[in-house]
Length: 338
Ligand code: AHG
Ligand code: MN
Ligand code: MN
Image (tube, rainbow, N blue to C red):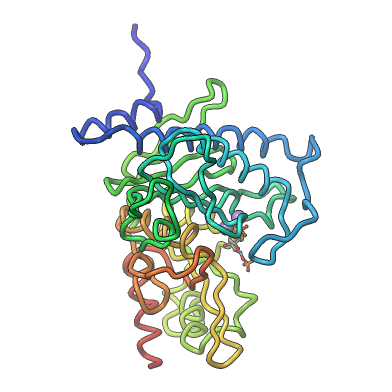
């Protein structure tokens, strides 16, 4: 009797690469290196509470947010997994103010990596799902070591994007534009195994996810939209179920699999100065890339997220991401107010 051969992430990545005869293997190796870093971070996350890894480091990052010990651990783990491989020319991280150069002693390569080492860090201390988000571009600068032009590329130029979710199980979900595929870490063998091939966002929308405590910060259009999603404006039958974890990556993952919309609208309390929270390059753009590859959409309220031309590494954006009908609904409510 022969046992069914599980599809490891390594084998899957190799098989995908073989469809592109001109591929050098560098992108495949970056994905595999990220899976490796994800396993190390998962191991540390799983020990949280037992070892001294919970809580803050005492420092504040470039975003003005308290840096958690696990944020720093995840950031260093990814950097160290990627810095010496000769596959990247530059990196950018939520936790580091400036672009991260490849150390002089190591070779550089043809790709750019942007990442949010740990997304949802306000949830770390409470044993709630968190994740790592990544975005990969091709190097476009002429010099050997990469520069800010490599970092500031529009989302539609991404060659791959994905996340590693440290939830009730650890999952890696990624796309190179050819479908969205999910792998679950089997802790008994330490391998990510293909568990969710060709993820497609369900047509039917079950959930809406938004931090509703910010209701008074939104435009009237967004308030009406959320009222509609709750069933208190328009047809009560339009009501969805509310789910909000407060870790973008986990909220996105649930809606990707279960169907729904995630909203993080801008704060418009100060006239003429809308403020957004989520970061374009390593939060919104990679998830927009995945959403589109899974048959959904992502906008900032006016534009497709993947068309936004970035001007800063830590640029923020409003985000509405979910299945096509829901994103069209957002557009209708916003247009009605113009
Ligand atoms: P990070 O932990 O990487 O700084 O990101 C936090 C983000 C995101 O994960 C989540 O969707 C959002 O913050 C939650 O914000 P609110 O607490 O304002 O709802
Ligand atoms: Mn984040
Ligand atoms: Mn983070």
